[in-house]
Amino acid sequence: SLVGYGGGLSCPVLAVALAPIAEAFWFVPLESARAEAPGRLAEKCPFPHRVFTDVGVALKEAQQQPLRVLVTGSLFLVGEALEILGEA
Image 1 (cartoon, rainbow, N blue to C red):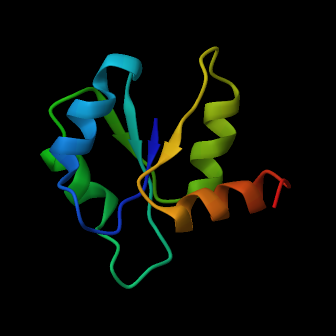
Image 2: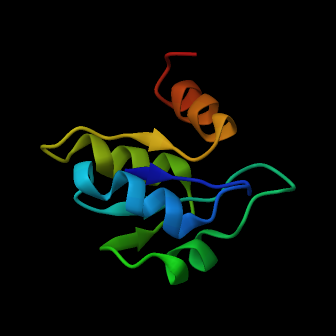
């Protein structure tokens, strides 16, 4: 699960909801004034996780994983991911 988060639900609530289908959570930065830093999100996550400083780097690594990737947490992140992947 590739997660960027702009506020609202707490990260642990989102992680608990997605935990049954997620092997790990990858936190990335968002281009939003409301965004919480990926490192701060990771501190609150009780599940296996990683922190990335760049969405593109995280997506590139995610594409090499044998599992599906869920991009969630913010429509801004989904839009950025689609643009990077050339699908926007």
